[in-house]
Image 1 (cartoon, rainbow, N blue to C red):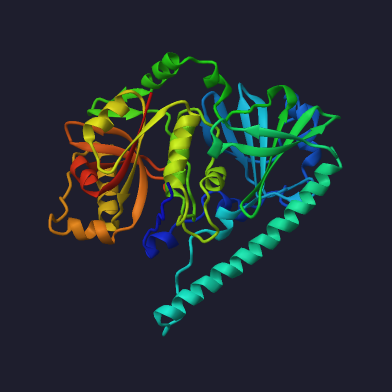
Image 2 (image 1 turned 180 degrees about the horizontal axis):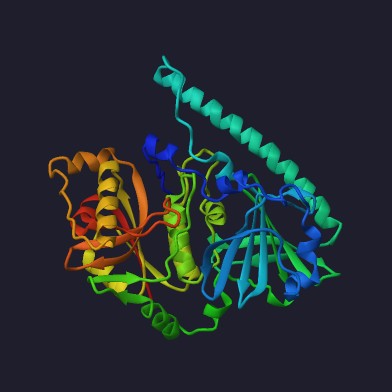
Length: 424
């Protein structure tokens, strides 16, 4: 089922949102910027642990027993400029290096809807379309040239790559070219999604995987996985029931709140997924919006890939949410976002964290219907609740490492459009 879905924030909020990963990289002055690190990446010592990875690394949201970090530099790999280099470690041992060379989400960001003064509606539509077409042409050229340069270098390693796949669910299955590096015994897998995503994954041959589900999760039976999730439920002295282990995956300046919240839950459930591949799998268009994507199908596919089911409702049922959270399952809600209410959620949450007991001003009952119509649609992850205060506790994908927030149950019930509950 396809959905024309826009996750737009108001303009002032958008301008305050940097691309939290790539923006920081672009501003970081590293001695590795522009340097080719291929020899170090392929060195046996790097994979045996005797040679450390060069440069400064920033921790990222991990998966199961694996930790993740990204390099605070923009080096070259195989002679081609890298956009992002990520490392996956398990028990302090390097398990995978992931190098992204082109990503449409970062290139297009949010659609710039600012217009010259004096345009009528027809002129405005044509102007925006011209802007989109120009960016598409620029990215297509960049992608083609980058892909050709990278493939040329890889063919120097292995002229006859084999085909490989990763992912069980049809919509999430990635088709890959696997190049064997004979000197090191490493396998270099190329993910080439034309005009969307160009990425390499490097592993030792014996650790190759064909599933997005973490190897440690694959070994567990259903009852063991459910028991492990239930152990993530914590209760505080002040009455909060909260799940531990749900990490924020910041969306940056991209229309990806629906994707990044899904990634946050997916990684918590043991899936090695990221928003860039989900954008490909969900058929995102290069327009700077989520319009035309298959978001609902994507959510169902992620649940299947994690070997769970998904309940989707067009309203908010607090008892269903409470049951999910008590079982260790976070809940995603698509809701109508309002800037004034967002400020209030932040203020109350900060007060509570300081030991206070501030409450909320309830939205004007007469204003709620119009607020729901005019407010942008936004996705959040519910990770807890407080029965005494009648609140939910939630995370935002634009918030980076900031703490969770709080909102009255009555408000989420009034403003929710869709609620996604994962279950066995």
